[in-house]
Image (cartoon, rainbow, N blue to C red; front, top):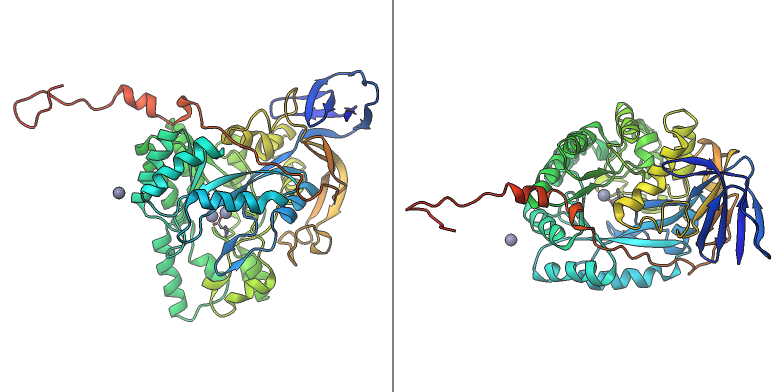
Length: 486
Ligand code: URP
Ligand code: ZN
Ligand code: ZN
Ligand code: ZN
């Protein structure tokens, strides 16, 4: 089935132009002014609207088993929520359970995501180090279409890995043409601060935030950057929430290191005062790691998006219900960490970023879609409106308005951290591989429509500074003692 989107402004990351878009089947087959309508093709009017690549959320957790419970949105409802807000692809974190191998976890995730309504890809988590992990990483990259490996520097006693694991794994990533990712927080310091507060009877959700100050994130970001550099590995830092971590990334990039940073829509727009709310539930629903920060950090994050020192906006969508949050009523350490936001990411970023004049529509497309496709290596299949790309398309109505409310959301949780936020600019129509998947927030896509997006290893030069460093690699000095004569 073919259709032409007529009369809109096509907005890509690099350029906006008045153009029509011809779709045949699942693919964009032409983009240009005044395209002829093929016989039998439907015409979709986009006058006054922007025609943009479908959003990519590079960081989600569907039916996530974590902190003794499982998050509410599974692949079906998570991707439906995504589509309702203009996001046509998610990249989910595949995290092996205790004793489970990476390849087993990957197969588990493939099974769980068969019900997805939108396209998806994965990052694989490295939770320990041994020969099995070493071998599995090669299988994951070469046979299973995943080129990114996640490392948790926090969650001591659960997912956290030490520096030796980071160094082993980062070197392996470099060898395989993969990219390392980190959750950057110093888990040892967090654990001590948590114990200290709890020991003094300070058990409320605000102490979740106080036990994870920006310094623990800045330290871990700097450490991961240096370890990645020594390993010759490119690095992606997830959920960058504060000035300290952003500055570490910015410095690294200025020094020529391939380091990327991902702020979340939550950290860009919500702040630490949410934890001061006298309603325990209100505060606990906003418990995530890293926590919401004092407002001054937001300026640093927005500036990073403008300057390009931060490249993508994600959600870390992790949907724990109010009831699940209450597991931590007497101890903030037991409040499941995570917040939702998948369906609100693009509309909130548009209202708070584009309508305010901080970002151009092109920059909006870059940080919600194109940059993720490029950085994660699925461009130009995803992330762009052009001939040959998947027909993941959003027709964006800049005049449409809505007030966010949990009562009308697609996500299965009972609250919304953006409750009451007024939006101007919404997706009117969302196409997933050529099919109308959502219209004015209403989801039409079916369970199971989504497909796995395999991502190839990165080309050799993208493996950070390995080539550059090889040119100046240490050489042994020929001498009588302590000598290696080449
Ligand atoms: O609080 C969070 N972010 N929960 C999800 C797990 C993670 O750290 O990404
Ligand atoms: Zn070792
Ligand atoms: Zn994390
Ligand atoms: Zn996460």
